[in-house]
Image (cartoon, rainbow, N blue to C red; front, side, top):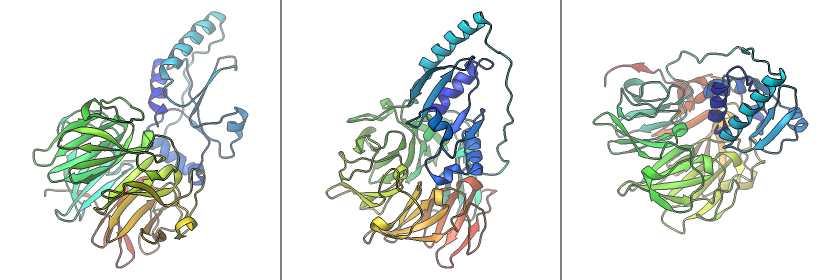
Length: 444
């Protein structure tokens, strides 16, 4: 995700001289399915073609060892450089400009534009919704309409009465009609304030629900890196904030891009490291010494913080008022995943993104398994509740989902951001039935 803006800038800078081809060598089985890749291309707005290297043939041919890796090839077919990791945009721009000059002189540069067919985003009310937040006290549902770059506020029955965001990518503060976001994800509610993880802008935004305005409260708009200490929130560069959780005036931030949890004191507007060294790994221990891997979901029961630690297919927890140690409830490591119910080390998940606490239980959106599961924290036991394991959009007792990314529990109902189906689904814990929430515009 961090490389895509760099590639987009290069494609725009060299529209006829440069051809970008994505090679998708997937770690998770779900990511090898062609339809899921097509959905990801739409979600991220890719203009270039993507090859599904599901057998790792191209990966091995180019001796790749890391995600992501960039290979620059000249017009005569020779590899000029191979770069692993991110942040190489400016270096590549210089190299490409130099190559263009050289090969124009040699007459080996072909400058005819290359055209590719590109699917269009679906015309649906939602586009790839990432997270939802249901509030029983006010009977409101907050939806991160990620693909449309906006936030919807509806009743629990589906009537939409507020839209924050123009629907176009941007980072503009102001009224709900003026505000702009870029692929927002996590949401947290505190009084009349809705906090938004504006993921691809690397910002935290606050929506004042009374005045209908949006303001930036954390981040510079530039992608940051690992932090060790603390500082004023507006001066700290964030790194793909993916989810939020509010507890006692503190806003916890799942900083997926640098494998850490940060915390913001809302009274002082100070940001600080809360957990994780920045190393992408599964290491338990004191929260500042532990390691996470793309934490993407947060929730709390008031006593502990629960984390969907996606890249290690794990659920982690930190006691907020005790020893504050990072512990793994289920999950084994970066390359250990699957779909298995059970207790403790028996459990296998596949890239969970969403988590929600209710009634002493932790509900999990097991995203790449297309399932909703429940975790009993004291026993470390996990059981599948909804979903067949196959991607689909069927309602009823044998419901199907497609990469659900977020969920929120109110009483006996789970509201689910069914991301690739562009829908919000509602799972009834009493009847074991799943329905699709019919969203429609109206007045509150």
